[in-house]
Image: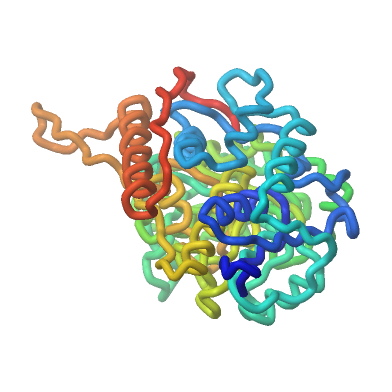
Length: 467
């Protein structure tokens, strides 16, 4: 499809964070964009205005600086002039070392950029069927039922979820293998990490679980739990022994330290191809994040656990990305169709907008006869989209950016022992940040042929900043 002057035209569905970014990124490449947005013609339960990129929950796009994984992704997006981050910078409000915005000023800024661009045509109204041609689908967690049905038709209904029931994900390096061990039940392969409880440890864990605070959902998130994704806190309320006869059963798992089954076990399953992230099996949860951290660190072997993604329970339409997406964000079933944002399996404002930028850039490249690209693995965006394309599809859950998505630095050799020495956070994260940003800007300038702004020095910040 082309404009009257033979300029190629693509379609973007959805003008949230991902869709607005995709439309502006594609237009920046010189292609025309038809941007469909159903609001305000048809509203969702979460939105209040017809503005683009409306923030419906938090107003933070995450922590800044060289210690922060989101800080690296922000810097990557700033280097290519991505609209969401530059609009956030313009609408910034004081928030310590996090990038937080004035909600209304931010969405108004994005809306003005989109509506003012001469190559973008905004088309109001609901899209119920995916159009022909090159399309970016960026309809978010509350994708309308009619369009969700068509996405399911294209990808396979079993690959589309409508309820995000996620368990905490742990960084592998923080698991204590003096306590935990790898094994499978009975005839299973040793594909799981097992954390054993004594009776006393188990009863203390259940007592803390019963006292933990639940996240209070928005009215539009309130759904009946179903047995396949019952939160661990709900399982525990059915009886003190219910978890250990369910997801915490020790049957078939001999503790190598004792040769016997423990009283209960928490199991972890590998999430990524490199084995750097592991999720707690059967631990879907809607608890507040602070309470999740306390509970996870009560699990034997996870006392120093680094949680790279907290558990969530909410209404969320998303694809099983590793089954349906390439690292370019193209659908395997139809390479002319791109998916971005929450629908692609991301979690978080920043992640949604960054995948929108990549999908829009690649859709424009395809329309111009160029090959779609994937950013380098060392970059945070490259690590994220590679995870989406290659994660374990069994029980896939949406992911936010974290340091386990990018390759580790080579471990230095301890001159006294001759063995590799484990690097601490403050030793490894700043050089990983600089390595990732250098790789991304070189890729964007050379491979993608984009105008790149050399990044400003990262701000100094503390070791941890809440997302």
